[in-house]
Length: 343
Ligand SMILES: NC(=O)c1ccc[n+]([C@@H]2O[C@H](COP(=O)([O-])OP(=O)(O)OC[C@H]3O[C@@H](n4cnc5c(N)ncnc54)[C@H](O)[C@@H]3O)[C@@H](O)[C@H]2O)c1
Image 1 (cartoon, helix red, strand yellow):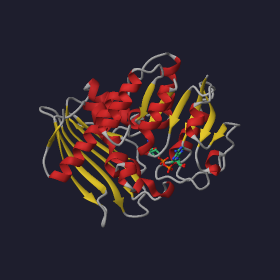
Image 2 (spheres, protein in one colour; image 1 turned 90 degrees about the vertical axis):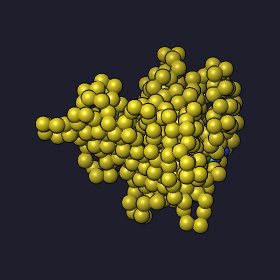
Image 3 (cartoon, helix red, strand yellow; image 1 turned 45 degrees about the vertical axis):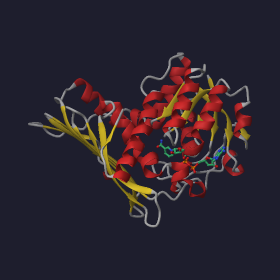
């Protein structure tokens, strides 16, 4: 049994709490920290979100100790694993402090706002006894895992093209709207689009270069939309789009089109239709998916790594750092109008 302390009881903190409630044979939430009293006490009626499970409710936290100050949660010897679910500008500082306190650390994506901060986290993680993983839930999403497996086993031949889309109305749910301040969240490129950046790294490794165009929110220098082309010397054409400026009421979509020599795999969450494989000469086929989503799967995986004394291999801290680096290279490309090489 692993005792967990969650820092940040907002949208994703309550989502993670819900996953631990399904994993009671492996983990117990023993502490929750949030400066907002109602949130640390489980009144999540005012906690919104823009993906599944969008509206919070009142929850019984089963006596998890409420902390207003995250440093006090780190000092609690009962807490073995810390789940960092706070705004992005706090990720590096809290991950470093928790690792130095000897805890296992799961931290929400993106790892940090800058490559320098990521490198600092990597350095501390390498010298700490605790396991460390960034919660890149897309690597654990059943549909995304299915595509990754088909690339690996080449059942449909080699891969020709990838188009990924992540499209949302401008998020208005975050506490004091921190998400809309790029100095706190990194804007749409680091907050939303980084999911797909990391997913392409998962599927294909790092590209040789990226070229991007992006659009800023009117009256601000905050990027709200990005269109990116990744260059692989002899690999597939990769296009990725991230929108934070869909009309109000649109909600959220993640979409995947992957074209192989002999088939295409297509999925758009917003249509409500399942992922479908269109193979030449065959009826369209709907592959069977596992019962759980990526949030559950990533947490279960991390708990299994801790229990088995293994460093997470499905999502490594180095790759999460590379995702930040590539997302920032896209931003640089959008700003300069030039293709940016990736080291
Ligand atoms: N994986 C995903 O699909 C996904 C989805 C949403 C958000 N996220 C990530 O999760 C993180 C949090 O986003 P959110 O949507 O939950 O935001 P949110 O605004 O809903 O919640 C953030 C919470 O952190 C708390 N907080 C702020 N400062 C704190 C501090 N010093 N100590 C303790 N708690 C503090 C706030 O009071 C708030 O309750 C972000 O990094 C975001 O990128 C990931």
